[in-house]
Amino acid sequence: MEENKRRVQLSGNEAVATALRQINPDVFPAFPITPSTEIPQYFSNYVANGLVDTEFIPVESEHSSMSAAIGASAAGARSLTATSSCGLALMWEELHVAASNRLPLALALVCRALSGPININCDHSDSMGARDCGWIQIYAEDNQEAYDNMVQAFRISEHADVRLPIMICQDGFITSHAVMDMELLPDKAVKDFVGEYEPERYLLNENGTMALGPYAITDYYMEARRAQAQGILNAKKVILDVARDFEKISGRKYGLFEEYRMEDAEFAMVLIGSAAGTAKDAVDKMRESGKKVGLIKIRVFRPFPAEELAAALSKVRGIAIMDRSESFSGNGGPIGGELTQALYHARCKAFTVNYMYGLGGRDLQVIHVEEIFEELMALAATDDPKNSVSYRYVGLRDVADPDHKQISYLCKPENSEQA
Amino acid sequence: MIEIRWHGRGGQGAKTAALLLAEVAFKIGKNAQGFPEYGPERMGAPITAYDRISDTPIRVHSNIYDPDYVVVVDESLIDSIDVTAGLKEDGAIIVNSPRDKAEVEAQIRAKGYNGRVYTIDARHISIHTLGRYFPNSPMLAAVVKVSGFIDENVFLENMEASYKHKFAKKPEVIAGNMEALRMALRELK
View 1 (cartoon, helix red, strand yellow):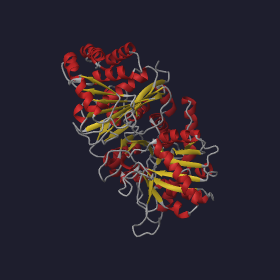
View 2 (cartoon, rainbow over the protein chains, first blue to last red):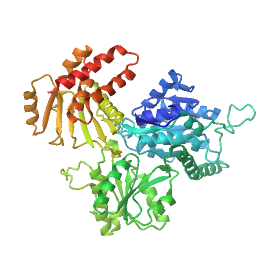
View 3 (cartoon, chains in turn cyan, purple):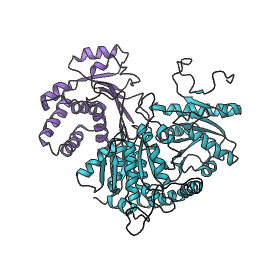
View 4 (cartoon, each protein chain N blue to C red):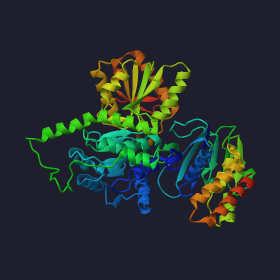
């Protein structure tokens, strides 16, 4: 029985905790924060019940949990922690330390809005705020993917060509607290897949001394940063190799992103996370009425699959780029910025609109996705660049439009004449 | 696809009941989703929970706006929350209440809902069978009976197995919970 795949119904948090039980890491320091708290909570039960022999360290803050995970990794242990929102923000300094010291470790991130206003619900302000910290970032649409990504995490992070920390992201409450059907791999299959961690260089190695976290000024800082960038550049291939091996034990195929009904699509939506599931239902509905729409769900945001995305979008006329976090750049969100850069480099002429949706847990429904597609088609038909360069908010409580006649609202300066 | 919306107050177990219902559906081979929507995180604040039960895989991740069934665990919410919002006319609402069914029905009709109305006195059933107020089991049985997505005997067999697993260290409460389910199936009005 133990060696068979099992259909189960678990919340996203329990799914990730189960993957961690099967991985049996060496060290797990943790500090609780909604909605990720259940991950260390489930895991501490596994520790108490002797299902794992992990050193579980309750610490006094997220800065400390990340510091302890870094210390453990530097010592030569397989380590990880979990957090959300302000917890990730408090780790900010340490996130850079982990990546720049090329320490493999994992972070189970349950995405939640940042303050303020204070909000416990899902958006990607936390993970996107940390997008330039040097970590690999992989996102999940549902509980199955959160589990599968966690199982693949250490193989990617510890790979000799990469040696970078990895963030396994899922959507707060939407997947973390929702029970869904999914399939677990046998314990042994996960153990064999992940393998023993045998670090090449580590602080507790009595046969080799090393320095970690040294000082570098103008002489070598830039070379160190360039070397670190190489890890991210190399990660793409490693992520795909690990995904191929994972398919052999699971039957489930993963790439840098997923293309859904893109074969002959004229209009596409690009998004990340759980909203992709909702958008797939909308795509199916619109396809039934003959609309040529498709979607791309980005799985790997760091490294950013720029060329691959541009190639996948090369034939579409219009793209709705969906961001679930504000950059406050006045120029759209992080996916909007990075994807349009990729499209520009590829000489792609598709008409793009950058949409801001789902902030602080604002619900995105199937009907919203349909309306966004309809609006995208109408805006693209104008072929007016001013409709493309700006960004729009989906589903606002707008006093000027109490009946929600419009699906989205253009962002513009108050003194602007722009319509 | 059957969609169910639960209204309760934090601490009353509406979320747990929604997750239990999803588990029951999953165990008989359905695809199921169960999830909460939290407002302020405190005891007594209104919370909503949802279930989707389907013969095909479920991908949608939004809340439920046009439910087939609504379950009101705390009837004091009827006046403060639009519990029948979007509820399908060929669906039904189940209210946990000790009051006469006619009175509850009139209250629901006044909100403009013309579909079926059921009442169940979960407090009475729970106190009678468990000695304490745990509305989950009676409400679960009520929604199973009204929605009819699972045979009542199959439901009871599955629940007994669940309770044996869940209460492995407290076997004395299994019989009481089973009796609560049976009593609720009988006493739903």
